[in-house]
Image (cartoon, rainbow, N blue to C red; front, side, top):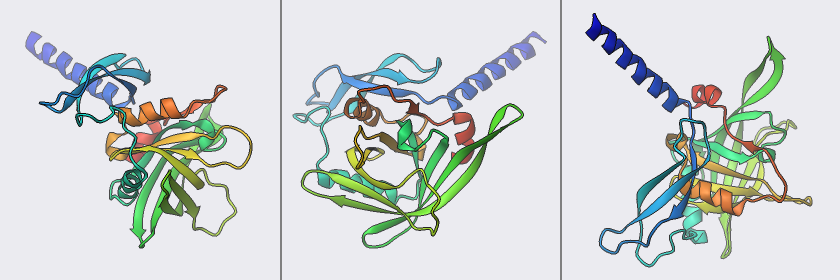
Length: 251
């Protein structure tokens, strides 16, 4: 009996750990701890928790690939960045918005934004964007309604920067949370950071898009770029997906 009791305890512990791991998103910013090793082409970085719940480690040290002589936080060229974004938006794997200033999406009622590529032409990418919109309260809780709309992405580059333009292709006057032109501030093969181009006075909001497979552990390079390049002079709430809701939408 004692052995069976211990087995059940072990099963419960594993289940609890699995549940904790499935209900957290840990955002880390990174700091270089040493130069790139010429022999191993590796460098050590310290990851410090920017946001996340109590199950996220506060700091940790990891090793990552590097190129001797390169800056540890090298900014991709416009051509590289445009290539990264084009590869991601046309991939079979969907993209999710994992962190943003709340006004990136409008009025703070939007959750679980996901973009899926349906087809492409020589210059454009035809996407379907899914999201959940908070509605009236029922029995003391907010209800979320799943919404979607078709859009076209166009990636353009100049010698100085890269832009991603999102154009909705439906015949409706309904406001949508994603639309307009965004400057790509940083990109890698798994994520990119965009800043909305605005015509009105004020500071533009930013957002981080990641591949769906990385949403639980967003790439620290994009989180670091967001943290460093998207500072606002006044406090603005940060959008992060409600994992209890979004996991059901994304998995």
